[in-house]
Amino acid sequence: MRQTREATVYSFNGVEDGVPLDMPQAFESIACSERVAVQFDLLNAQELEHWWGDDGFPRTPERGHNHAPLTIASPTLGPLQRASEEDYSAKLASYFAYAKLANRDLRRTRFVRLFIDELGAEAYQIGEWGELLMATRRLFLENRDTEYSFEPHVDAINFGVNPGTWLIKKDYEQISALLTISGASNHAGIVFWDKRPKHRVELNSWIKEYRETGRIRAIEHVATFTATPSAGQLLLFSSRYLHAVEACLSQRRTLGTFLVWEEGWRLCH
Image (cartoon, rainbow, N blue to C red; front, side):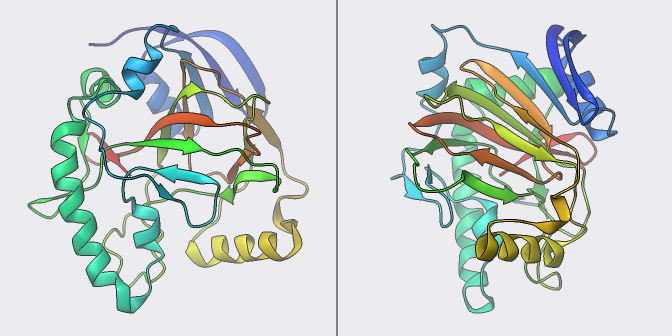
């Protein structure tokens, strides 16, 4: 069912409030590069904990992210994309076994149902039986030590470390969907730069430069903006632009997923 909502829309040329859009229009405008991000008021205060505590989300122990003060209660594609050759096969099997089981319950969550109902979305399929994970809960921890709680990066499901063995080859216009349940006390936002790495090698070189020097020369003179979604707001954005989460001075809770167009919108994480 298509529902029109007033949106705040972002581009590198400015921000516009009160734009009436339904969910398919919002996704299409980002996919065709008309906009970088679209933000909706989605939930009221009474709904937030129901969405966060949905029984369909995995009850696995929360595990720390390997390069951010962040915990995610599920295995995700990122570590698999970066896996070494000797670990790759085992991690691949583990990820797909987990995703197939977890998706049965994730399909019942309010968050995933939003995209099923309004976009007709389904899980991204690999082969006849494989599915990518549909969504996760994310808890950012208090961070007073670094500039960002998640350093500059992009999210691209085709960016495997080894293109020869990585199972997704197609270069998608990938869209992130991020629902804020509770923001950090300092209203930490997401910074976007008008720069897109062409491939994993270029992205890795930028990340290496940032970790060694605290800067990335390639983005020093490009346009930028910061989106600061608050509790109950859904932020959709192109995850192919370099972006980073500002340092969260207290916990920050979000629900998240990614979507790509593959004969319909497909969820992946």
